[in-house]
Image 1: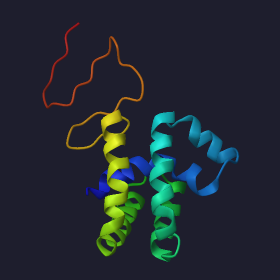
Image 2 (image 1 turned 90 degrees about the horizontal axis):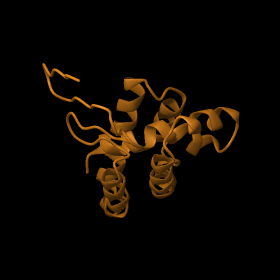
Image 3 (image 1 turned 60 degrees about the horizontal axis):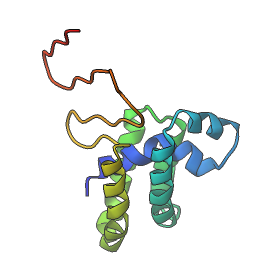
Length: 136
């Protein structure tokens, strides 16, 4: 399982998932697509019981919740989840369908140059290639 995809699903939502609904979490929740938040809730429900007893993993999750755009915080959580999942292969099997659902729903970009759209881009242009030119 690609741990970076897990963090792509969880990262934007951890502020809400870890703190519950308070003023800060509500603001974060407004910037997250509702579909992504639903997948993140399902995923966190499976991961949380395994993350909370591990101080380093919980700290990494908390750090990313506080700084969702910090690539160092993201990398720290990726490392902790990688360790956790390598110790618990059954957990990988439990969360795999949730990750597949999120990727299939298009709420998370998975893979190089991928794009996730949480709504509609009708009439818009998405470019992921090098040296691309868009003419209207």
